[in-house]
Amino acid sequence: MEDYNKNVDISEIEEHDYMENTLHDLSSDYESHDKFEEGKEFVEENFWTKVEKVGKKLSFTKDIKALFNYFSDKSIPWYRKSIVLGALVYFIVPIDSIPDLAPLVGYLDDLGVITAVIKYLGSELVPYYDN
Image (cartoon, rainbow, N blue to C red; front, side, top):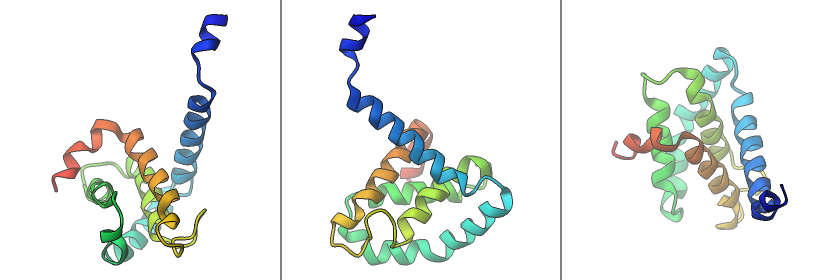
């Protein structure tokens, strides 16, 4: 038992817990189909405006577009898309943990959320980078 504890890095556990909590929070607002549809309309109306406004400044724009392509795929059930919807809404809305109005630093929290969702989806997201 002591050997196991020596090999576990506390920061890895904290990072895993943070990511799990973030992913749960992102999808919890869209657990019902009606709530999902409301969020879907918001993303569809605002996504490209936000990408055009800040896309050239961000190194993770290709990841955001891949998530949007996944989100737009009609073959993916809505409940699988709910976590992506939460991440896209988080990206679009300028007021979040670190307001997007702060130059560059304002997108660090968005990057964290996008990274967590990408890690959660894993290889399922790979085909959506080509679209």
